[in-house]
Each structure stands twice: as C-alpha cells, then as structure tokens.
Length: 354
Ligand SMILES: Nc1ncnc2c1ncn2[C@@H]1O[C@H](COP(=O)(O)OP(=O)(O)O)[C@@H](O)[C@H]1O
Ligand SMILES: [Mg+2]
Image 1: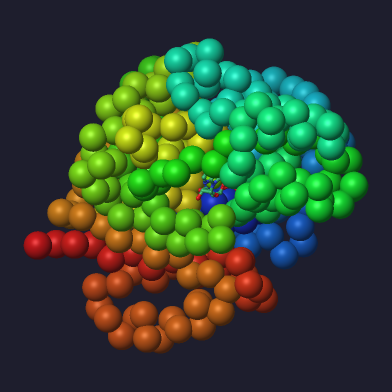
Image 2 (image 1 turned 180 degrees about the vertical axis):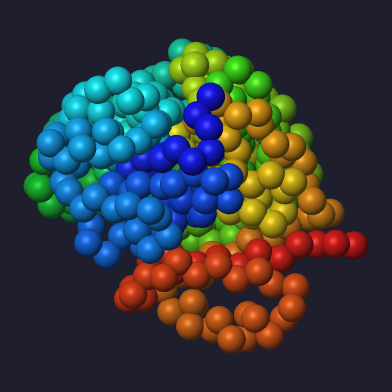
C-alpha cells in the first residue's frame, strides 16, 4: 500500500490528468505531472510538473525518483522509454498500454478472449485496402492503428471510389480497415480492479458521438443497452483479469441486434465516466487512485436515479453563465486557453433525482 502523503506520477497533462490529480489531492497524495506540453492543464492542480518529451529518459528517471507509483491519463505514450522508470511501478502495466495503443493488437487480443469486434483487416498499402474492401465490403472505416482519438485518423469509405480518392500519404502509416457497424446505440463498460483483484463495475452509460467525438452520456442506458450489458461486462472482466489490470478500464461497444460489438478499449479513466464524479458513490478518478495505491475500492453504485453528462465542445464552453443559472447543473471547465472546433473544453453533469 502506498500511504497518503506520497507522490503519484501522472503521464499526460490533459483534463483526465487534472481530474486524477484532484482526486489524488482529496486522498492526501501529491501529484507530479509529466507532459511534453508547456500549457498542460493538469499542471495547474498538481504539486510538481515536469515538462519534457516522452523519450527524454533522463527526465523520466528524475520523475520516477520523485514518485511512489506512476499512472497515465493517455494511452499513446511511447512504451520503450518507460523502462527509465526503473523499479517504480507503472499502473496499469505496460502490456495494457501496448495493446490499447494499437487498434490491431487490441482487436486481436479481444477476439482471443471471445469478444466480437467489427470485421477487420490490417492495411499497409493501397493494395491491402482494395483486398480488405473486397473481403469485408463497404461501407467501412479506415483507421490509423496508432495515435487516433476523437475520430482523428479515420477515413469513411462509403464506396470503393472513396478508397481510390485517398491521398498516397494516407498509406505512410500502419492502418486497419473495419466494416461499418449499423449500431442501434453505443455504450461503454467502466470498471475498476483493485490491487487485490476486487473488481467493480459502474452503471453503464449510453453514449452519443457526434463527428467521432463523445457528445453525451446517459445513465442508465436504454433497454437495448441494458440487454447487452452482461455480455459486454463479461468480456471486460476477462480483459482485466488477463492483463492482471489495476485501475480503471473502459471498453466501448456498439449495441446491435446480434449483441455487443467491441469497438475499442482505454486503459485509463474515460470521458464516458465523468458522470461518476457526482453521479456515483465513488468516482472513476477516486477509485483509480485508490486502486493504484493499493487501497480498498469505493462503492460504484449510482448516487441518483440517473445521470446525464454533456461535453462542452469548442465554443459551447462560453455558455457557462447560462449553464450555472440552472442550480441542478454541475459545471466542469478544464481551463484550456483556446476553444477550437472539436476541442473538449469542459462538461456538465446533471443528476436525475426523481
Ligand atoms: N466500425 C464502425 N462502425 C460504425 N461506427 C463507427 C465504427 N468505428 C467508429 N465508429 C464511430 O466513430 C466513433 C469514434 O471511433 P473510435 O474508433 O472509437 O475512435 P476514437 O479512438 O477516435 O474514439 C465511434 O464512437 C463511433 O460512433
Ligand atoms: Mg472511441
């Protein structure tokens, strides 16, 4: 067990790191954020900040010397330089990071555990894509294997002509082509596994994405989602156990007539779990900190009849005064300087009490 008073290292300085640092502070821990970005918004609420590149092993070594445990808020951290953390434990572990940062590895891993992703094939060239389209059909989505988020690094292929129109430089990176799923709804399974193996699920949010970006989460999900939760949870549990996972894990699914289709996983706290701050007995951030420090987990049950979480994207965050004029709203602003289209600036949570 890591006792309060010690320092928790957080790789990544975005809003997830910011909310993790606040949860750490609540439990009496100090947070040390490591990020290559000078304007890391997590740095405003932590005890120490290292600004350095992901592959700066000297900086990683100094960072590790200050931390009792290191976690990450972002899964695209290059894995090799993390050896510089030495004996300081990374939680969740490196394997979870390696799998989740590669869409192909992630789909193969989940398939081995009995899960069903959309039909997929690896693509490294234009010829591979033609072959994938012949095998899987259209419509489909071509995605970068690595570094995609919020719908970035994706090309929708409605017809083979869309594939022919792609620029040659698209094929400079490793890709995966997957069939388009005609889903009825999207949902995510959020769980936390403690160092002692205690595994708890939060209620399942139904998620709506707009332009590839999460727009809102509603808890509990609708009847269709409810009907698929058990199958999805059973897969998520297998993933957590297979990875000997410690911390919060999120798996995203499409709800279809044929049951849940696995979309992707995040080895970290997740935007579709922000509602847990006010809407669950223990938030995803608090339980993540408890888990990586070896403390017992808190209850994950709902603290209200239901919860709605809306992301504030781009200019929407400017409406904060109107949002606060309704006393039922909880406003979270991340302190990002410039609103850009598609940029997550904050979120609003509202509990459904009766
Ligand atoms: N195979 C698919 N079929 C249908 N919709 C998809 C598919 N893949 C992605 N999407 C839509 O795009 C969103 C973002 O894609 P996702 O693969 O989760 O990327 P990101 O890593 O950017 O979140 C999904 O939540 C879903 O709405
Ligand atoms: Mg996603």
